[in-house]
Image (cartoon, rainbow, N blue to C red; front, side, top):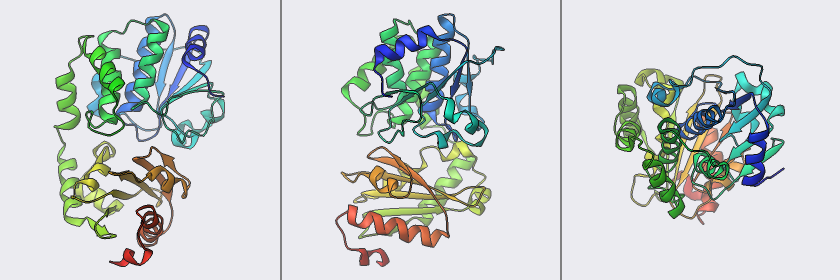
Length: 323
């Protein structure tokens, strides 16, 4: 059931003993939203913990280190930035049918939670959470504000993606006024790279494939490539955006092999092409310009299936796939 900010605020005020679920392969928005919510709930006397199927990257330690787990009997399950319960990952899958409140910004949200606070026009889940805190009259401390700023900054590519709105900038400014170290956050999130990330980018630039009159760029990353570059899971965050750097490219695709042999597809759009619609055809979804899905088969078969769906979205003929 979709609810508004007033109803979500009432829910959080009336309940306690929270488990806050984040999605697998956690990014800045789900981490920032999860811990921002946790800090805020604790500040008003609630008990709350944040859980994830995967480890949080060291680059987000400045957000997570000040929030050690509390001991209490969990009553209320909330998810943040999780559009589908399948995205919770194997370790949290057993919670999927018991989520009381989901806070999200993905238009592809499946409505798996009992109550859903959804704003598909928000640039990040952290933007939705900020508006919720305003409704609840919660005064954010620096750490909680840094959590929300980090989530918004990372999901907007440091405010350069088209999902960024005037309201996004206003919220960011209000979070900056809380005294956060925004310059340090932006440098750590966007300028500093691990050796594994640098090697991964080197591989991507040298191995990129181009299709459909160069309007679609595609990279395939096997487990062997991951091992060779030394890249960790956190090194892949935001990697899909590199596929849009070629002038004239309208759709970028990353096909990455998982440990179980399946392939995670991440798709980005630099035009009016709705990649969420494309990914939905393969059981996935997301945003108009950033979406993904999970596929099985050989990389070549997956590639042709994806290109067969991308071509008509670009208004192009299928025969151009081989050109």
